[in-house]
Length: 443
Image (tube, rainbow, N blue to C red; front, side, top):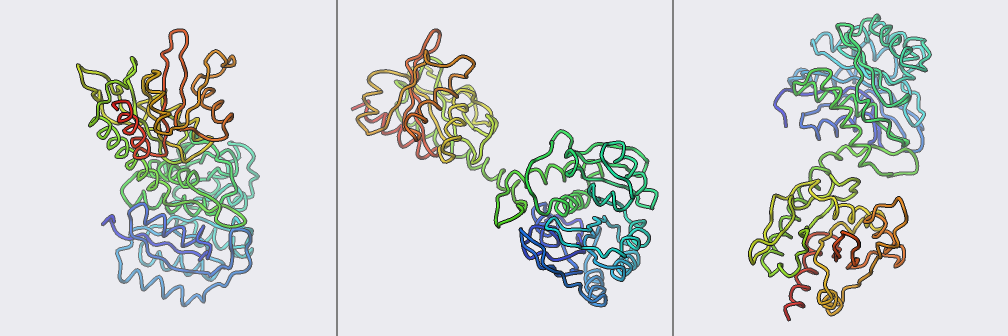
């Protein structure tokens, strides 16, 4: 945990844990900052619908704020659902009294359709709280309600940001998930910046993106980042959380706040898996299995999408004298040939994430048969025009069999060396086949 003070989130409780206080606390935790919370309202909702809300009494909200402020070193607050005018005035008064800067996420409706701010409280929000905010982060619909400006293009978005800043906010970010994915920052010096435009718009019916984004932004600010750097980092955090998300109910998809940790864990485990696999293979006589172009052992992370998600030996495994040696370190993106084989396999069976290429010979093919490995061949001459050989070859074999075999081989072609590719679910599974094959050939 960071020792840079405490982040406070003020807002509503979401029992589905996709948005609100729960989403904020999960975000703070994953990003390494300590989060405290003040609940303003208890909502009754799930991923499919918003049923009702119960706003807590103002004196109970005030007591929560004071209990935290009088005990902890709160450096920054994030303010979300407030419900009504009385609570807006109370929160403004308490945060001002304790001199705590805050980010205002002016939630008006939930993504599940619930009303989170009373109609007559919008003006109170604009006059009592918004002018004191360090940063305001409305989405497109919220920016339209705050300004009365219909936003259909970037020029409208800029005009709305200027209007919000004139109300008194120090900085404004209009989040663009409802437009084209990019966010617009208008900073305290009047400069516009685009946030996360290169990340694009990730399709999906999401729950809690706004809460998560603002919480991540607050966490980045708390750890010392500049506003623009914090905003860009928060955008990437949300995109990662989307990419690792999966449905948990019958409606909207909540984000996976631990997505980045899962990705980093998976990459570490895959690197260690490949290293262990290479070490084990090189303990045996692997020289007879080395093709002219060298061999490689590769494993992909779960959900791999590109060659950068596949770890392999940089420079491959080659012959040096009478030994097989590893040329370079195990790295992501180190293989093209084997990475394409694995990615093609994973499109059919995501569990098949490992592969090793070895020299083709009739003796090795017989050894594969002797130890019970299922084999299948593709013929390069049959490749349709415009296809990539590995993508097409592996796909054609799998479509013919209905599953991924233990061995996929081809007899080469003009300028192409014949090759055997041994497949597996992970490094350990792959190496067990390779070691058995080495023993079968030696015997």
